[in-house]
Structures are given as C-alpha cells and as structure tokens.
Length: 217
Length: 217
Image 1 (spheres, rainbow over the protein chains, first blue to last red):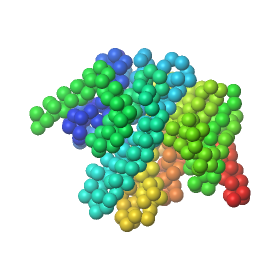
Image 2: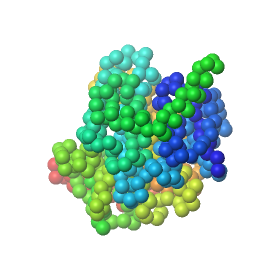
Image 3: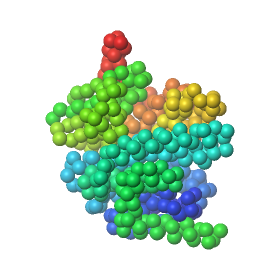
Image 4: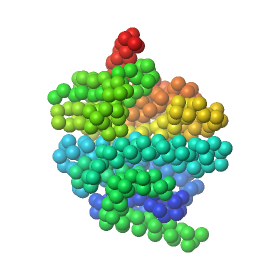
C-alpha cells in the first residue's frame, strides 16, 4: 500500500530540515519504505479537507490504505512498530527507546518551542530582549541534564533507535541559537544522526521541495 | 512483580491531582494493577540515586523487576501495552489512540506549560500582566480546534483509550484558569474522565498523600 505524507509547499525554514516532515521522511528512510508527498499551502492547511486529516491544521500527516494518522511522534512510532531497524526486539530495551522518544517531545522540546515563540510570535514586544535569555536558560537546563546522561555514549540507550531519531531532530532546532554548540557531546551526537545515510536522503528530499518552491516564486 | 512509582512527597498543587503521578496512577487503576509509591522530596529528586532513574530529576518514574522507566507518556503507554482496557485491539484504531496520546502531549500541552511558566516562573516580571493573556490565547486556539474535532462524541475515537486518559489529564490543567469552561463540550469530556472509578481511585490516592503531608508540616 502506498504511504502518502504531507509537507509544507514552502517550509518556513526554507529547507533547513527543521519542519516536522523531515522526521517522518527520516523514519521512512531508516525503515526502507518508499513514500509519496502531498505538498500543502498555508491556505490548504486550514481548509476542511486537511482539517479532517489533522484537527490542528498542521503537517505532517500519514495515509496508508484506510489508515490516516497525524502527529509526528505517533507517525514515527507507527513506522518504527511496523518495520525493523528503529525499535529493539528486547521488551525492556524497546520500552526504554520509547521513553526517549517521549522525553524528547514532552521534556526537551517544550522550552525549544517556547524560545521559538519568544523570538517569532513575540519578537516585536517590548520585553523580548530581556525575556529571550531567560527562555534560552530553560533549554540549557534540559540540555545540561541530557548531556550528563549521554556522557560519551554513541546513542542514548544501546543501538540507534526511534528515541535517538526524535531526540536528534529536536536538538537540531537548538543549533541556530548556538545553544547546541555549548554541549560538545550533544553536538557530536546530533552530527552522528545527521551522518546517517537515511537522514541524508530525508534532508535532500525536503531541500529539493524547498529549492523548487524558491525558484518558482 | 511489584510495580513501584515515584511521586512528590508534597505536590506543588497541594493535591488537586495535577502532578503527573496522577496520570500513571489512573492508568494503573484502569488496568487493575496494584502498585507501590515511593515519595521523593525536592532534595531527593536532584540526588544521584533519583537522577539515575530520571535524568531530568522529575517524577514519576516506574520500576518493575529489571525495568526502569521515566517520562509519564512512556510509562502510561507501557501500562496500556501490557494490560487490557486502554488500547483497542484493531491495529488502525490502536494507532489512532496512540496519535491522540501524542497530540495531547506534543500539541495541546506545550502552550499550557507556557502559561504555567508565564504565571509562576515569570509572574514577578514587568511584562507578566500584558503577556499572560497572549499565552492564554495560544491555549484557546488549540482547545478550539480540539472542541471542533470532539463535537458531541463521548471520547476522541470510539471507546475510552490511553489517548483520552492523557488528553483529559492535560485539559484538567486548564480548569483553574477558566479556559476549559469556555469550551462546554471539552469541560463535559473532562468531567466524564473524572467520573470514571479508576480516576476517582487515583485522585483519592494522591490526595491522601498530600493531606498527610500538610498535616505533618
């Protein structure tokens, strides 16, 4: 059955790979699954046809036969469950890999989203200059704790898993601010993720969409 | 094998059920699993023994034989996978229930956490009065979209699932601000969650801990 995902017609990051379809593309590449992409415009994302697929009007979505899913974490986990390579077979190790996926989305990413809001949604507010460093410190607190746990390990818990795929994707968003670079072992961990052939293919695919969009506009 | 979770010795909410151990207690009650609780003080949460269990120094954690997990979503999902009653058996319905769990944690909860930070971590800042309503509007946007999707259904997708357990728990945190009450179908949905006997038992158990803590102090 054909897998179809949605992605931005033109990503707000211009193709840096930070839009969430990259996470799904990466999981599909790790799993060796071909997929099709339906690009959606900002207008189409708020239209009834897309809201039926994604009640919060975002990308990515995932369609395969009669199954329609939204929410990046759920899609990536679905791919990890159905194919080999992203989840350990040992039950305890599998539960721990899932734990890292939730930790990335529920504990590490929220302050990163908050910094995004501080810079973009509130960048013109009088408090912006004083507040942005406060929010950045919340990210540093989490990354400091994560850096201690990772130590000099290659991945978070044994072999590369869906937990690393999501954590690397979340941490990537802290590179433009310079915060990732303050934690050399995390920066090296992210670089190991980016060096994986599956990530390279995912990144190239999203970049091609965004390069074409820029040339057309 | 005995299941042991951790909880605050004395919850910041004084027993309103908003601390995350309540979510795990609720899942264990739905699954009919007995459990023990180890209470941790603020000091103990930052000590090496607890950080080995939870790298971010939070509660809850989950121990069962050789397995040790942290992160509420992962723990609740682990319970849902191992026992009946929280996940549908049909594969597509199961994937959709998991989607709602991720949606609650990754899409609905982040602006709620942001409002908490705005009120508590930044309540003394000069921008607080002007900024809190902006953040509250981000919650309203998500709750408005969720309200449309829920409509007059009893639960988010068919029978009660782990997706509802996490979504109800997340929405509960918007009641003190009055925002939940602006969406009558969501308020009724949350009330249906709270009316479940398993929730009642979980709530009573965490309240007993916090009542005892207040009396001892």
